[in-house]
Image (tube, rainbow, N blue to C red):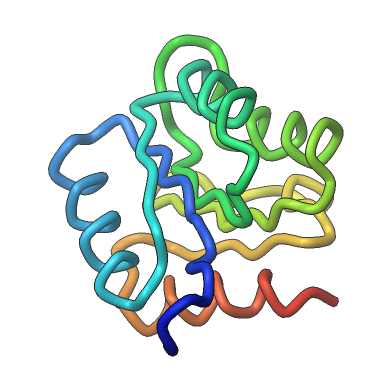
Length: 125
């Protein structure tokens, strides 16, 4: 990436600290700027204050009321231009749970899978 071009910002939402930090490092190493949130509520606060987020990578199974599916629906309503990558090792989303500008990846995911999904949602439909 050439100097002076803004790097797209990705918000990683994951309650497990080890998984969150590993995902953030992987995404950062691929050339993206990264923000982190520990749950859906914190993710909404980050999205409210950070205007440049282009993609959210979220786990489905999170505590404190807003799981990844509810978070994706909220993002799709409030910030329709933000791409969404939903991940889970336990839950498989039902038809309609993943917004049009979104992807689902089963955990454990490879670096190629998550970076490919981020690039795909950035490219749009």
